[in-house]
Image 1 (cartoon, rainbow, N blue to C red):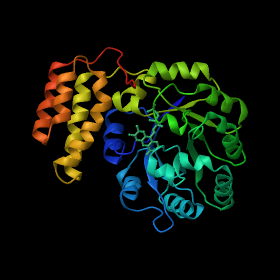
Image 2: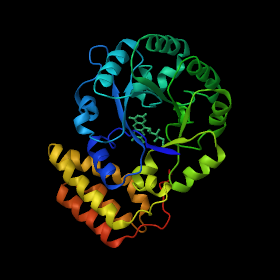
Image 3: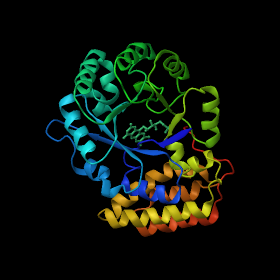
Image 4: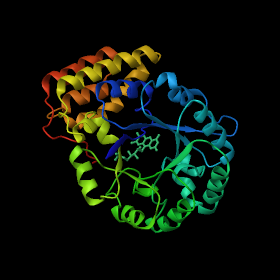
Length: 320
Ligand SMILES: Cc1cc2nc3c(=O)[nH]c(=O)nc-3n(C[C@H](O)[C@H](O)[C@H](O)COP(=O)(O)O)c2cc1C
């Protein structure tokens, strides 16, 4: 039974990852947010610094790339292999408009023949690093899924993580469990499940429903409750004091690495979108957090929330 921290662009970068791994051990691996590899820039900039081994010491990390060109993927994968990574993950799920219109992420799912060519090139190369895939089950309709899965099935993909939504769903609505079940029954590839596992109990229920699948990945629910993996493995539930320490140390770590208040504020406000649901009666301080224009306003509001609001017993992230 293994649980990974899903990649969340803008949230689970190496600063967050290091602190999370130190304070809430339990995740078996962390996927990095994607780096959009191109032929001219297979791996550089922010993506490279997020994946550098010195920024991820003693953390089980699986780097993720986003591209639809083997000529961009291969050099990036080789760089990662040379850094010591054993696995690289390909993003075939990102629903964002710019990514989709370039036929990358979930956009690539609309082109099964090109996908087939891509994988043929990738798996024909002597890469020396395992290639895993994180996918949605279609772009416009779940009817696309059987053909997409048939492409994956032709290749020795190390593991297929399935987020059973189509691109049009973005992150909302019920997950389409029948498409995951179809995969569990029709492919020989090792599977990992991702989607709406927001508590340890959600994970346990999943493992009961799919006893042949031993790997799950959690994202938003894991950000809301950083102790989710610890709880799944029999450890204590999240408590407010440790969440506050995590929060305060995260603010300090972002202040050290980001330039100025604004990016720190942006990161922390996004975090509260998830963490806020864990607290009872937190509407007022959450509003003050959202409205804060300086770090001192922000800190005042965040400290008020921790002081005045308690964690909801058994609380978990939910999507409106
Ligand atoms: C803000 C945000 C950023 C995300 N960034 C990535 C990413 O970089 N790579 C990726 O594969 N998925 C990304 N995802 C999708 C998540 O990894 C995950 O598949 C999705 O949130 C569903 O899982 P969950 O219900 O456990 O959150 C992102 C999702 C969100 C909400």
